[in-house]
Image (cartoon, rainbow, N blue to C red; front, top):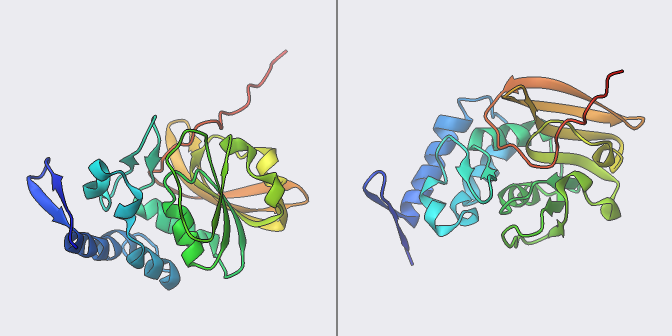
Length: 223
């Protein structure tokens, strides 16, 4: 059955067949032209229907090249940001992944498709998340899910002002981290590793990313 969704701004009707075409166009015009060159990442993003992870009134926006508003200031990352995070994450089958900012479950679904065992953290009051094989934990994003530690990968699906020590502590020695950093109004893609309880991050590229709540930089006192 092909359901139809009105896209009033453009005066067109979007069908399930259109979604398939838009997904293919996203891969060719957004991912492949923006250094998303990991074929496994491209394959899962070409396969997983992004529109299924948006409320009905936002489905027609699934493949635009910008963040899609969700609820209470939250947003779904632009496709390029998702693709670059997945590329830098270098997910291998069997990896234990702590996903922070699960939102509607799109990132969790992609990670699971790549073969990861995913624990996805989202705040209380967010939308229901139902992704096969994914464990959903409700609570503060900055607290993580210590009961499932240690993790091989910390995947923060958005930009934060800092990566809390509580999350780094939930990684295995040498565990990988991919995230966005929000610095002075600019969001940047970053990756790194946890070594001896400390995290070093490399800034890779300026990129539009959804900003996650609850990660304000700690206040610094001066004397």
